[in-house]
Image 1 (cartoon, rainbow, N blue to C red):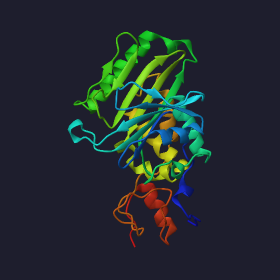
Image 2: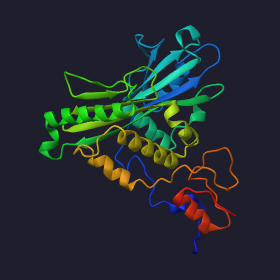
Image 3: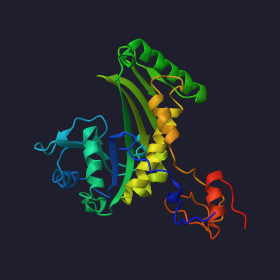
Image 4: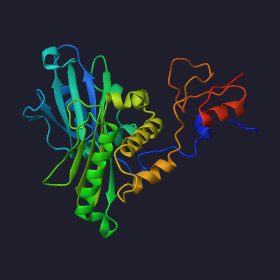
Length: 303
């Protein structure tokens, strides 16, 4: 076999993206660490120039104070003060972009119109604290909108999830059709499926532990890699929740079949040790055919 391969991306049929899989950004939280006095005004003024009004909260569940009013979008700035007794172990500001605000902020990042190094923070210690994705299944056929069928689907989701994670908790709202899993506080991820006008909405809320291997790509503006990884997480997580034989899961099964991401390879003799190999920086050994077969079969290369 004569292969001209420089990077493992060459082996991929396609790179998955939010756009290709019709996923939407629904929430972004940036945790900005600040030493000493916490003054959100500077961050508020900075984001105002990019189209965001600011609302400041002294702590969680506090009444907010608006700093600016004239823009279309809004960011919520929540102060976080070091207090181990209250289980708060960092000092700074949680910068939260919800719904369309998160979608617009991500758009600015991808268009290179806003950059993390521009934030008016002395040490520029910025971390991604939360990232939500959602998929909307349109009721293109009348039978998809039957509430009795949706109710059965949510019950099946709950049963499947608990069969795999029996220690977790799942709730289904009575007044309106909505499933939330898990319901405990400080979980790594939350699933939400609920009915909206003319569609069923699938949401995945991801916290730091869930996407820790994608943080570098996000903070280095490598959004092609970041989206490819997060799409994979989104699909696999809902695969564990949604029953395969449901008409409300066909969108998921089709995307899983198209999913072409290479598995995270271990123990490959590629000069890289004690690290998870990314398909975006994987270098091949001289024997390209052996490298190709190893990536396909996930086996060590023998020299």
